[in-house]
Image (cartoon, rainbow over all chains, first blue to last red; front, side):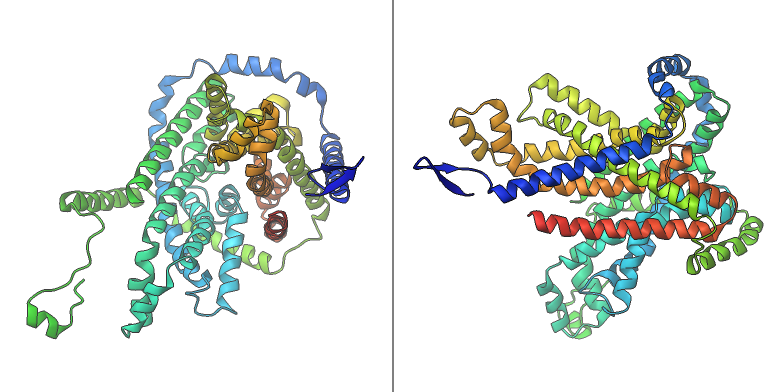
Length: 271
Length: 273
């Protein structure tokens, strides 16, 4: 923070002039980028549709209420499927993520030059691709149904669980590991008695957190044919049955809120 | 799991056991039996069509081969269009989302905003967080038509829930002393915010914005599937036509861009702090 002399008095400013210029240039570049992207993006936009949107929204809302409550009896099975997709997918994802996490953590990896980069690549790839895209792929490979949904959720969970778990492994207290090693324990014993008890709370917390996210994600997997309540959403959208769509939205919202409550309670109990 | 050495166990007659995770045996066993029962029921309700999977195996193989030899050329035009749309959507929606979520985030901080503004902002955040991007995109495509504008609005709206919530929590966690000091000099409310609170939350806010940029790009690939513009539409057509080599090319590009974003954002964060 520079102090300059002006009229014989010291004057304080937050930044020097070059710093101020740099910040100003940064803002200019940011705004220019925004304007350029906006132009590019809206080239093909038909603005008449946009200005019409409030009227459309009113119209749509009018068709969406009241929800068709009687449709609920057809939603119980898809809801059960959605729950299963999320839970089984999370379990399968965890089973695959644990070895990946141990390979990725600097202090437990068997080979830092070969296996660690491979594990990190698996984690990044799984994290960059959304479960809906995995589902899209899997439906075209193994056919529609909840199995595709489960695998999609599992593949997406590897990256999330793997990343958080390997960070937890890297943060453990090495002294306890050292103590187990000093007793002459084997490599597997060092892991089970030195490392695992230390990461157990983090692991449980991460798993429950991912289960909560997976409940959200599994509600829309049906849009691409991977089972669950999204299938009902897709078929209702196709026939423009808006009262049914409203009911499905309400059911999804309720499920998400409930799963968030459950996961918060469980995490509170664990940690 | 007993771990005592045989001689020690013989000498004292005591055996060490690892303490169970849940102390109450009744609760422990009912939880174990309950989850086993659920697992049996859940696995039982998965219908597997083995014939269909067998037929799909060569398609799965084609996808793996496509990953090894991605085809960037035959759909290059579509891929470029989709990527440009996705990237422009990402930039504009993140910028708009930040602009909207800063005031909402300030309003949702208990130690800054009056009660009624606090509740109003918190409910905006709750609405934005409870609906998934894909569902918002479906409604917006119905409202404003197909194309990136629907995606832009979707992502901006979703950004509010994420950024405002975390910003509000940061503001609630600040050290009150500097803010108090600014107030003691007779600073106005805006000066208090600008000099007392903003410097404390700024580094984390920049980090969160970069992270959200990353998320918005990944989401922009998804909402294209329901017609809200971006690379998702290209990906959807490629997969629908079983052109797995083109699909693999798109996925590889997405992974590369996400990796680049992650790398540069950690660099920028280091440079700022």
